[in-house]
Length: 177
Image 1 (cartoon, rainbow, N blue to C red):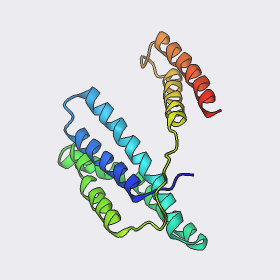
Image 2 (image 1 turned 45 degrees about the horizontal axis):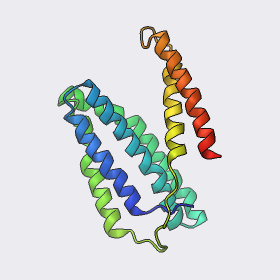
Image 3 (image 1 turned 90 degrees about the horizontal axis):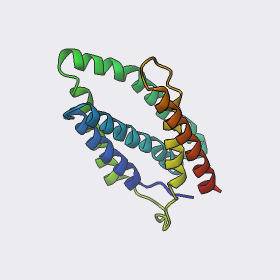
Image 4 (image 1 turned 90 degrees about the vertical axis):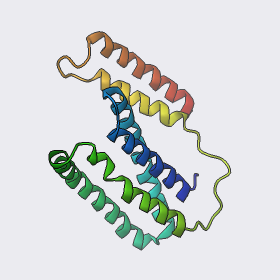
């Protein structure tokens, strides 16, 4: 059992902001893709911890309402985000699509850091992450192996990705045993 803390969220927010700013100033395609992957990793780390904290803060009856609010904001962001990004790219620069999220994210981290108080001690032992990493790498290898777009990857690379996915699945099974 791992207790989520505001520090976990703020580390995710800081990583997200740094990766977002990095994307805006990326000098080339490879660095942009790597920074975008880091941005996605950190963004993905914020949501589950935020939901865990909300579960600690609100009663069972209130929790459903709060988590519905979280979900609706997430959905609205998925609809409005690309629209806002397109408007920024059309009227300013595509780089602003990555810079615009930094100030609100830093404000949220500041407010969380100064206002949220934990009622229980932080855990002394962190959950092992090897299985998580193996599952993620397996999924990525499998997606690459199944990429059927013409000219995306050679057949040899797709076979190598499929074999890597099998090996990562076996490693995942061993680690999680």
